[in-house]
Length: 50
Image (cartoon, rainbow, N blue to C red; front, side, top):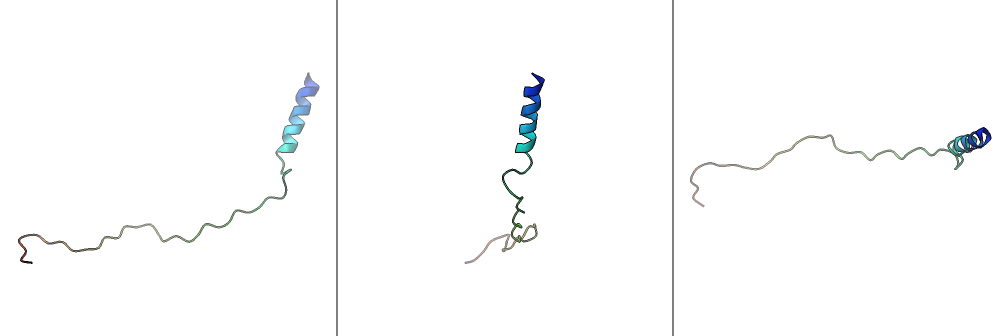
């Protein structure tokens, strides 16, 4: 029984050690503008003659 567990452990270690090829670096994230809030427009209070 211990040989079966040892064999399965060995297979698990070999499967997790990059058997699918060399590691590939992730692509850099695109440049994004800095976070912030921008408010624009006009406001008026009272009676308007348009």
